[in-house]
Every structure is written in C-alpha cells, then in structure tokens.
Image (cartoon, rainbow, N blue to C red; front, top):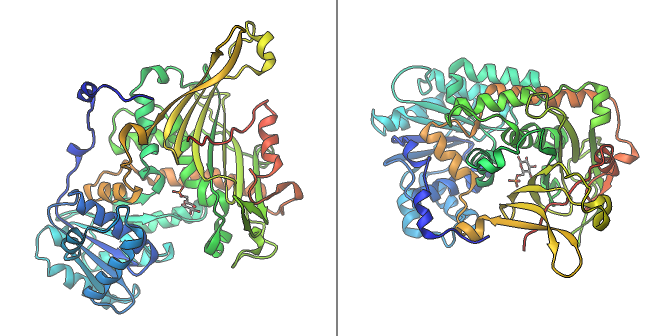
Amino acid sequence: MNSLNPADEAYHCDLGTERKNLTPCTIVIFGASGDLTARKLIPALYQLFKEKQMPPSFRVVGFARREKTDASWRAELRTALDQFSRTKPVDEKAWSAFAENLCYCQGDLTDDAAYKKLEAQLTEFGSGPLRENLLFYLAISPSQFGEVVEQIHRTGLLNKEGAGWQRIVIEKPFGHDLASAHALNRELTRYAHEQQVFRIDHYLGKETVQNILMFRFSNSIFEKLWNRNSVDHVQITVSEKLGVGERGGYYEEAGALRDMVQNHMLQVLALIAMEPPVSLEAEAVRDEKVKLLKSIRALTPADVAEQIVRGQHFAGNVGGEARPGYRQETKVKPDSNVETYVAMKLLIDNWRWSGVPFYLRTGKNLPLSASEVRIQFRPTPNVLFAAQCGKKLDANAITLRLQPNEGISLRFNGKVPGLSLGVRPVRMHFSYDSEFGAYTPEAYERLLLEAIAGDATLFIRRDEVETAWQIVDSIRAGWEGKPLTNREFYAAGTWGPIAADDLLAKLGHAWHEPQVIK
Ligand code: BG6
C-alpha cells in the first residue's frame, strides 16, 4: 500500500512519550546468571540506553548465586550481546557507558545475609531515588517468588507505602491452575499492592498486538463492522515451526494450553473482542479485557468434547528438516499425553459477539511460524454472481498479521479483467516494514520501559490471570483421565490433527493458512 503524503505526518500523534515518567531508579535482577538476563533483559536495557530512553540516571544490580565480580559479569554480558543484541555490531562506546551502571551481587535466594548485602549495595548509591525507586525483576522460578518478596520486604527494600516506588516484575507461569494462581497472587500481594506487581506477557509488548487497539478504535470504518451483525467468525492462529527442543521438562508440566492459550492467545482474543475502554489508562484497558474474558461461555466436559481439539505430534518433517515425535524428545515421558497442539471454538456471551464463533489454534512443529487474526465477514447474498462462482463467492476478511510480515490485509472481491464477468478475491496490504521501515523494538524493550515508567497497561492484572485460568481449568477438567486417541495425533510439519478441521467444518467453516507476504 502506498505511503501517505509527507504532509499527512501532521496527523501523527504520539500518545506514548509524554506519558513517560522516568525517574532515576535501580533495576535489581534476581536470577542474573540465567538465560533470560543475557538473552533478553540486558540486550533490551542496552538498546534503551543507546536510544536515550533510559531514565537520566539508573543502576542495574544482578543478583545470583554464582561467584562473579562486576567486571566478570559485565564481560560475560558483553559477549552475549554479540549474539543477542537487536542491532549489530554492538556500539562499543554506548556499551561502555551503559556497563558502568551494572554491578553484581552474589548471594543465595534463601540466605538472609544475601539480602542484607544487597541492601548495603543499594545504600551505596546514596539515599535518593537510586536507593528508593526499585524495580525487582524476578527472573527465577515461580516457586521462589514468595521467598524473595518476603525477604526484600523484611530488608526494607519493598514497601507498600513510603518513600519512592518499588515494583515487582514477574513472568509466567503464574500458577498452573486457578488455585495455584490464587495462592501465588496472595503471596505477592502480602507485601506489595497489586499495583506494584507487573506480570509480563511478552505478546503485549509486540508492536502489532498493541496495534490491535489503534486499529480498532481509531478507524471508524472498521469499528462499525466489529460485531455480530457483520462478522461471521474469527480465527486466531499462533503456529510455530519449532518443537519443544530443550524444554521438554517444562513442557510436560505445561502443554500448549497452559503455555500459549492461558496467556498469549486469550490476551490477543481479549484485545480483539473487548469493548472500547473509557480511556487508555491501565485500569480502564484491563477492566475491559477482564469483562471480555468473563463473558466467554463456560465449558462443561461435554462442551470440551465438542469444542476443544487437542493434538500431539509424532515424527515428521518441517520445512525439509526431520523432527522427532514429541514422545521422543528429551525429558518427555514415552507415553506422554501432553498436548503440543490445541484448537478450540469459544463463544462470547455478550451483546456484541453473541453467536459468533471464535476459533483459536496453536501448536508446535507446524509448517509455518506465524501469528495472525482473521476477521471473517458474513457473505453477501449470493444472488448476482451465483452463475460465476456458485456457492464459492469469497467472503470479505481482514487479517491482522502479528508476526512475521507484520501488517494488515483486507480481502475483497474484484472483477477479473476481460470480456467475461469473472469475480476473484483480491487483497489490499498494509505492511509495517514498507510503511515505517524496519524499526521494531523488541517486546522486552517496551515492557521494561513501561515497568520503569510505572505504566501497567501492557501487564496482566490479577483478575485477568485468574479468569484465564478458570477457562483453562474447565478445558483440563474435560480432558481429565482421557488419554490421547489416534485421531488426536498429527505428523510434525502438518497443520494439526484432522479433528481440528472437523471442528470448523461443523459450521461450514475452514481454517485459513496464515498469509505469507512476499
Ligand atoms: C512462550 C512459550 O511464552 O512463547 C513458548 O513458552 C513459545 O513455548 C513462545 O515458543 C512464542 O513466542 P513468540 O514471541 O516466538 O511467538
């Protein structure tokens, strides 16, 4: 699609930057020797620093068990940056200036003395904001969250009231069912207000996921169509070419439902289907997401049998590469019943969406890595073109491509040039890359910045987590005690079990393969 005239730039309005409230602060990373720190957190902070997005002054303290000095930690991170930085080569000048703010605190998470040492280290930064404004990033196992939160509270580093601000950032899994999520949330909020807890879902940091709200609520032409009167059904696909790889142990406990649906997919669904919020404030947006999640029709075990399809892949070939079956992966039980694929039909019992099926599917070892949302509109009355197309006249669709080829496409019918009256679907594409160039901040850059600024819009609130678990728990209850049947297996490199096609065929629908835009 052609770019707008540069004069149209006048219409550009930035809702983001002036909201930022970047006070000096210290970021304490628990689990600083881990993969996440080297792969995501430090590269994101370095990038923010390079782009002058960090607060005027800041420190990053890495807390972990292994013996390291400030210098050896910095050297390790510098090496990792060669691999994980979004922009290469690494800017040595920017890195050196950034690295001066990094220090290491050796300690065991269960040792009281280690927290005292941390407190002493923070006090060396003075008694001002670098000591009081603290962002605790818990890059550790959720089973350790409770202990760390209690310890930092006892050491006087985390307070519900008092000077400065303190926030806790955590990542999934937020429990493994509703009961454990409740317990975790209770632990976290014993020593911190819910407003101090920032739960990450990295999908919310993706540019295109954020664009869902812009697209829906800043364009009247689409907003008018966004309801049961015009929409026939919605498909949300998050397909992955990768298998579980080294993560067999984790995946055995999670499965596709907990790993992808409970969080990323229900978040995307909520943004696609929620009502307009009263403002863009965090609580307003999150209120609407919760309302939407609560209006998803509850599933009985009989509904689960009807509406939810699970699958597990056996060996196959993905893009020319041989892949083992899930049961042959390391740390996976040879008779595992864990699902590597799930497809579902959800119904939303509210005024806007009554009767419109929302189909969701995700899986490992599928033919493509692609995430997209397709809004399929109702067909026109097929009276005029029946002779040319029979029943096949294509219905209009809007596709939001979340990744890759980020963009939006509109599919409609056009006349095939020529003397006959041929009709064929054509597409109008908007692509991020051609419109805005390649600049796409990594999800962690945005999420860290928002957490530092104290804006919780892109983080998940307690009631969102718990409502999502209710949905997932009801599905798991339907599967309880039922091993996978033959119909539920699929070959790696295919689009999942046949049952997933049958699910849509019941209502005359079919999955659309994600678009690959050249
Ligand atoms: C993670 C899941 O949350 O999201 C992984 O644990 C999955 O299993 C990943 O591969 C997908 O994220 P993305 O950004 O690659 O789509």
